[in-house]
Image (tube, rainbow, N blue to C red):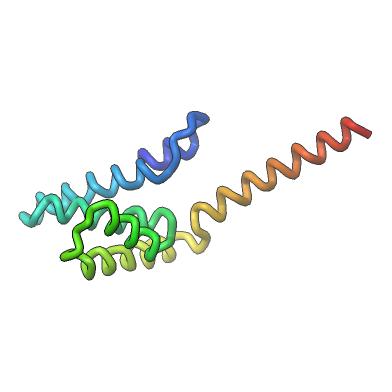
Length: 120
């Protein structure tokens, strides 16, 4: 929800930080419910959620691994990143940034055409 609200608002906030925050919150909640380590669950939640949002599992894996420095969790982070990616691809074939770029490019083309019409 935070990522969606950030995306549709006119206030620049990005997608990166809200995705990590939501993923960490979801992961730590699941970890607490399952009685496992909350810190690791938060890390895995961040990796899975971010990977699903951007549909880039290697990017999510590397970013989360570099942010946390938890090299003992390489395999779980990699696995959760792939699960998030596959789940996201089942729900939406197009990555979020591709869709956003199409919207921005279309707006830029409309603005350019309007400017050309005003100049002629």
